[in-house]
Structure formats: C-alpha cells, structure tokens
Image (tube, rainbow over all chains, first blue to last red):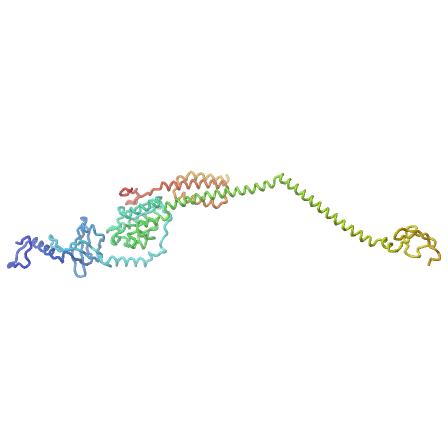
Length: 418
Length: 91
C-alpha cells in the first residue's frame, strides 16, 4: 500500500505495487506539483473551446498545430482578467501544471492571459475593415451632418456602464433641453453584437415623433477585446442603416473600432460623443437669446428713431409753410424789390442824363447858329422863306438877314441884280 | 376686414400660445421676429406688436432654459418608452 507521502525516487521496489486509481492520480499530481519548472511557466497557443461558466470559472484549451492542453482559470483570476480571450486567439498563458484527479487529466492552472500579437481576431478585424471600406461604407461623402440642436438623443449602451453615467452627466450639463432615449444593450460578451444590433434597430423603428435626431453608440474604455462587439459586421451594418446620424464613442482615444469607421462621426470617448452632439450648449443658447433680445430692442428703437426723424423733417416743413412765415417772407421780398427798383431807376436816370449831354453836344455841332457864328448869314423873305437862289428875289424886295448874333433888314438894289 | 386687422388678430392668437411652445419653436419664432423687425419697412404699430411678441418669445425661451431638466427614457422590449431611473444618486 502506498503511503500518503511520496516514496523516495530511487527506493528500490523489488515487486510492482498495487495502487488504487485515487492513489495513482494523487501521486502523479503531487509529482507534477513538485517539479518547479511546471509550477511557473508560460505557454503559447491558440484558444479553443473557451467557456465561461456561471460559477465564474473559465475552461478552455490551448493548442498549436500538433497538440492541445486543457486549461482552467478559477474565478478570482478570471474576474481580474481584463482581456477576455476568444476562440482562435493567440495567447500566452501564465500558470502551473496540475492534475485533475477525478478525471486523471492533467491541465494548466492559468493565473493570467495575454494576447499574442496579431491573433486571429486582429486578422479578422483587418479583413472586415478592408471589405467594408471597399464597399464605400467609410466614405466621407456618406457622413451625415449632426443636427445643431438635437431635440432627442438616442443612446445605445449598457444601462449599468460608466459610459452611460458620463454621457448623462455631459448632456445634463450642456443641453438639458434634450430628451434622451436609452436603448439598453450589453456592450461586451457573446450577446453584445446581437444586443447592439437590436438596440439600434429599436431606435430606428420608433415612430417619427419619438425618433431621436442623433444616436450615440458608446462604451467605456477597456481592453481591446472588451470592445470587440464594436468590430462586428452586423453592428457596423446596423449603424450604416440608421436613418439618423450616428456618433461612436467607444473606449479610449487610442481605440479604433469598425463602428468608429462607419459612424457619421467618431468621438474618442463617450463623454466626447456627448459633447459633439451638443455643440451648441445651454450657455450658448442663453447668449444667442440675449443677442436676439438686444437686436429686437435695437430694431424697434431704430424704427422709432426713423419716425422721429421723419416727424422732425415734417415739422420743419410745416413751420416753413405757415402764414406768418409767408407774410414775413413777402415783406422781405417787397423790400428787396423796392430796393432793386430804386437802384434801377437811379441807374436809368444817370444813363439818360449822360445821353442827353451827348445829344446836346451833337445838336450844338449841327446847329445853323453855329455856322452863322462862323460868319455865314441866312436871308429870308418877309414871309419867312429862306432865299437859296438869286432869282428868287425881286428888286426892291425887303429881306431879313440873320447873322450869328442878331438880324437886320436889307433891300435889293436893281443894278446889283445879276 | 383689412389684412392688417386679420394679421393683428392672428398675432394675438399666437401670443396666447407662446406659453405652450417648445424651446425650438419659440427660439425659431423669436429669430423670425427679429429678422422681420430688422428688415424695417413695418408700420410702427406692427413693429411694436412684433416687439412685444419677441419679448414674450424670449421670456418663454428663458423660462424653458431655466427649467430645463434632461428627460431620460428607456426603450423596453416591444418598443415602448419608459422613464429611466438612474442607478445611484448623484450629488
């Protein structure tokens, strides 16, 4: 009968011992656990048959092209594990080798798991991204503009997540006028892709009057694997099919998912997504409101001022048209006319005087008296006719001779007549 | 009835409704009123009426901003909307 303690390695056994199965398995387990090289080792392989049990324990296999080994990760370890493996993924497991006595199967008791570079998932991601991009789903021309002031904002996220809390905090602070419609969905785990698709479709199916103006698809930060649902093709296509613009806010700033590429706008985080859909905040609206009120006041003041100016012009014209103004104007015009008439009269008189002096001089020049002054004489008959020819006079006829100064009578002698 | 009286009446009717307008509707109406006022070319009486309407709209907007409190609904299976109770109390 074997003892409970291990026998010495080189103890001679002349005869084969007879053991129970339990003894055997315990012995092998203890043997394995004594080998320090098997108690802290890293094993690389691809995950297969991954199963997370309700108890919290994880069971899966690691395999490579030629072999496989069972693995177990107990709940305390699994709970602390941020990276959740999926089948086909290349990982490196840290753990120790032990034996499950009840089944006689040896297994790796895994304490932590790390993804190994470009696993199957990553290759899937790259392939899907290339395919959707080739379809034109990432085309910037496809991206729709967000409404300036969304009345209703749809949120596709987990009702229990930190992302929802962040989203609501930002929306409440920046734009509490909005109505938020939460379409709850798991955002990680195997049900997440179908849940996201269902949530998106439920929002799209809302009647027009209740339909959000913009939809945010969000999930808080986590390991890359936690965001995997957002790299699902069905999720991507559901986002593309949304009737309203979709903003993605998944993970951290450095995380890019397929959902980010097909969304109309990618926000680095859920909070940033909430900020982006509320670009016009309550404070901005208060400012606009003040501005509009001021402009209304100014426009009214301008309207009143225009009327006042028109009134003043009208009053000025009215004053100008009044009888007393007309009378004064008339009086002034009469005075003006009178002065002008006086000036004109004096001017004409002076002209006439000048002219008269000129005429007198001219008259003087042609006056016969002036000729007589030079020694000529005018001879007239008694009837006053001027004698121009000698034949006009009779002998003995009395004639009057006018000279420069005075006149005298003469008579014609007969012998003097020729 | 002259078109102007008709218009004044409809303004009055609208004024009675201002208290029920949503922020969006009130804000847009206010912007339209200001544009109309700034356009000038209004009878003074019309301008005054418009201004008063603008004041009422601005007051409505301000009231809505002061009272604004994010309404949160959640979609339940079947597509109905229910009020959403936030987990945990804040502040």
